[in-house]
Image (cartoon, rainbow, N blue to C red; front, top):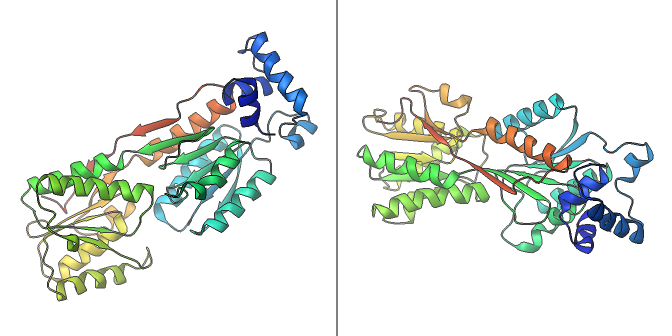
Length: 335
């Protein structure tokens, strides 16, 4: 028996069940009785360890991320933990890697630790195959699950996302308007966010009838930290005869490799060659010229995610999905 089961049998929302369990006065006596009757009928014991201590909460949130060495994910974890501490919550961090089995094991571990909620950082936790997302749906039947920059339509799952599609679409059109037509899209992820970015680029290029073939879509399979290898990858494209005068990269690390490539080819940036990155990370300031990049408002996303989580834990009705717009931060690598 889970909170989800109780909500179904009582004919109320999961948030209403949460309010009853937390002793909120913002529930009618009639609704409260319906929920308590189901709880008593099925002998449900919410968060047994915490209740045994006479508490309504463990004041602990589980955090899962695929790779804490990734600059974007590491920064997100920093913002999330900072906001949790400010609100009196501890956290347990699980670095899962990218395999489904390890993600499932980490999720089960956090559930056994009786955390009050679970945050999935990044879009690599969501799969196209519905059955592969069952581990999230099952966890959400026990505690709220928050998705940072990913989306899954399931009970007790809440999403806070950046509008990656629109950001990439507008950035691509902006580069085209400066006169650059042969633009390579350089990417290394097929996650939820990765697919939205790619779709934005494709939509803009197809709208202008510039997507002449698959050779403009270049997927890099290597390490996300190996900039020399990324640069070599682009140089090999040049050796094979592919000519292009702009690169839109799915993150700032790939964009740095694009800048190195352009300099090796003796292109002037941005006069002969334009580069645009994504995430507006500190790497944007670590090159010459400084990198034009899309700021996906990561700190804002994380702050709102915690705001939503605290609302859910407090028994409030919170939006299932919140979308924030990104912003192109122009620097020296684009015209």
